[in-house]
Image 1 (cartoon, rainbow, N blue to C red):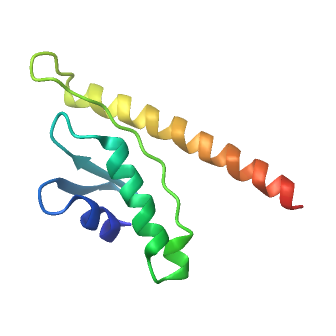
Image 2: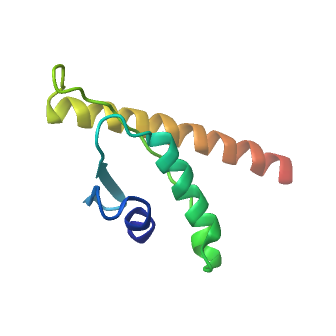
Length: 102
C-alpha cells in the first residue's frame, strides 16, 4: 500500500507509516482529498499483481485552516474516527455482497 501512496502523492506531499497498516498523508489546504482517494483506487485496480488489485482501504481526513486549527491530537482523533466509520461502511458492504453470493 505504501507504494500506491507514494505514486499518488509523490513528490509534493508527506507520506509516512503511522503504525502497522496505517499511514498518514499531509497535503496542503484547498487540495481535494476525494480526487486523491479516487486516484488510489484507480492505481490499485490498474496494478498487474492480482492480489494488489483486490486490496481495499479505509480512510479519514480532516481539514485545518491556519486561523482555526485543531491540535495534532484533535486532528488525529477526528481522522481516526472517520477512518473507522469508513471501515465499518466497507465491512457492511462486504457482508451484504457475501450474503448475496451464498
